[in-house]
Image 1: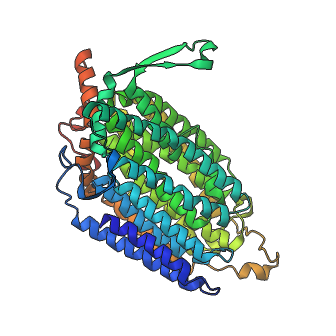
Image 2: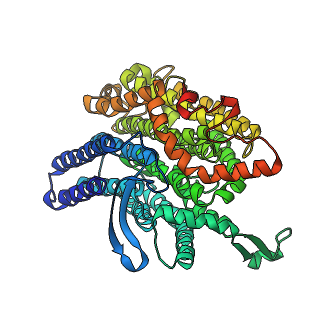
Image 3: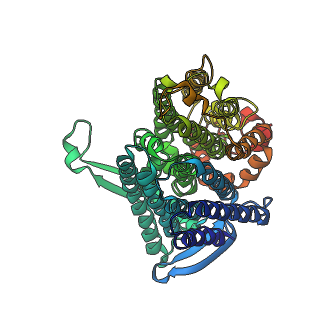
Length: 567
């Protein structure tokens, strides 16, 4: 089922290109792309039904639905696929968003190259599924880098005026960071080969090998930086810290975290609507997923040591980008910068290293994909009508576009974290996780992050007030400023409503009843954070302090599960 979804998306894209090459076949290409992505979504539902949600991962069987073929036998590289609960949910998020993004792109100006546009989207879908389903690190890295190619062309060809610079900056930033990640992965595989005599890139085996690196001391010469004040000529550390540094370089850029976030607002702003939806909805999750899947289990000692530093970076990003959003005049750029702030909460919860924080982080990945992806669809629908994103030219759309305004306000409230909608659950759990992680972070981190929630509510509601409320202020239509031109602008049609309704339903369901999703994550989270939990417990025993673990948190009551916390 897992390689089948990837093959359907790839083969579907390859079929579209030659069979719909003649001009005038754009409508057929649109329908074919929508059909292929819908089939992939149905296959993902079949995968979810085949998955045993009651069986948590174990050391011997960390994945389900596994399948593998030899790829590069000499170095133990395989085409290995498998999933756990987190992978399943992220694959479902991916396959759910793609048909909606493709359907939402039917009204976009694709510059007469619609066929290539949908081919690149389907290739991107295949690559994203491969990232979440790979159990071999080299296969993961291959799909991880493959996502750059279709997005580079989607932004560079179909984006706005500054699209080429945005595509190049996106490509260079993410590729440069992932090179360090690749070096760290190869080093862990080399170390494992030295210990066992066998090369392998199977994720669970490399996790065990990387944990042993905490006892391996290395000396890092500072070179030309040694002459700077307070910088020693060499640094003595453990190899595990260097592995975490390499992994963090690639995944932090992909999240993105401050200060390597500058590529994201530009890429979001210049990308076509479908590209922005997938970029915000799924691609940003590759960074947080990589930290969850590799950094936390591979380098537990280093992660505990780095947690306060990472938390500070997250909080700076949350507050800094929230202030930028507050003064932002470009509607699409405001939503783009809000993604940086929101993903800061996601990583903050992950590095709280307890059940509430990590569970909230995974929940945040899904919720952010739904609500922010929907906001980009709404922005794209307005842009197709008025060909501007300048909020100074907008106002009173609640009078002119009441259906659009209803959806827009709904998804803005979900993004803010209104209780009853999906955003509230993730935000509450990440803040609660940071608040209770007294042995890793502390109350001060949670307090500053909570202040970011207030700023988030301010800039989102300010945006709603400028665009939806007040007297009608329509942008000058591209064909003129005559009043008759304004009357040509109509509210959402049936196709656009069909794009937004499933997203609204998903936001409402996850906001009102998140317990099944949270309960399904508990076993996987306990398995992934077992190393960091052991490190925190050992240090607490050494210091003779009380430890708050993932399964026994005094502030939550004894033996409280994630689902019980949510209730």
